[in-house]
Length: 454
Image (cartoon, one colour):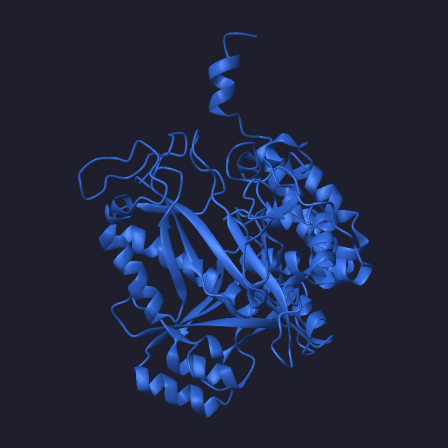
């Protein structure tokens, strides 16, 4: 992260050092879309001292298409009151793809009386992490994010296709971990790495995934809020780098029929805040806390599905034999179940949550996963026996569609307590409105198979 302190003077100095002329002040809405304001640097520095940066509270109660469902006004103020943006100076970064020196900062949101906006995704994650810190614990996460590159497509009725690489050909077969397949798009990935370096986004390894022109980037482990910020910014970086090379990058969970879906796997563990000791290990063995954490994920992640699989398209990814889970069984080094425990030394003992799609809001994915694990520890939830064979031979136990998931979350009192009552109410209203909008769309499958046959 940039070495910028919380004092106004240090922000002034940073702006002067980088000759910043303009700044983007960003927040992530429920869908993870960047909202906010763009303003000249001098005006931003003035507003940093006061409360001039404002947005309507309703930006956190709108669907992915920008509507605010009527039911949400039962929760938020119907007057659409202002909330105040409080920029986090530790997130100041230069934006490398603009001609003019432009900076970027992520903001926290507060009401006029100073309370954090409890329906803002960054606030939801802060709330969950604070529950850990009250106990002297520090949760650690390491996200892995998958995405597709596709040919530019301006017609939503036309299926997506892989783009043409340096060879002049489209990828047709499956090239999992193919090095030359990655190098087909070498100039684009050079841009991504350069943009990430300029924005202090600490990515690790890059690999080709199973799908045609599908890739995965791993992030180094660290603090959940910092990693959620990085994933939020990384999505924007990848889309920008792709468009500069005249292709699209998509984080849809299942963008292409017949191909694998894209996930946001999250490795997680808990360390003692004072000593740094991994609390998931007891000598060479798994600790009791570790087992309870897995038990909590098994018990509550199905209630948290609207945060893990937030869109109607998300559930197309969660099908058998697709590198995506269909249940919440767990096992050592087993990629066919929802919860994988990688082989590791005790100091790196962790569990990988494989449920979330790449389309998830990273703040909400991490908040939900950490909340479910914490509930398991509090309630001493004992996990099921580990699975050693294929998890696809076991029953499908996840919600099949978004309405089923919404109903489960709405009725989950423990998650409402940890994530926030108002947040859960708003999210359920928004996701119900998105489902209702989807129900008005007639798909090409219906036209193809029903038009003249029924």
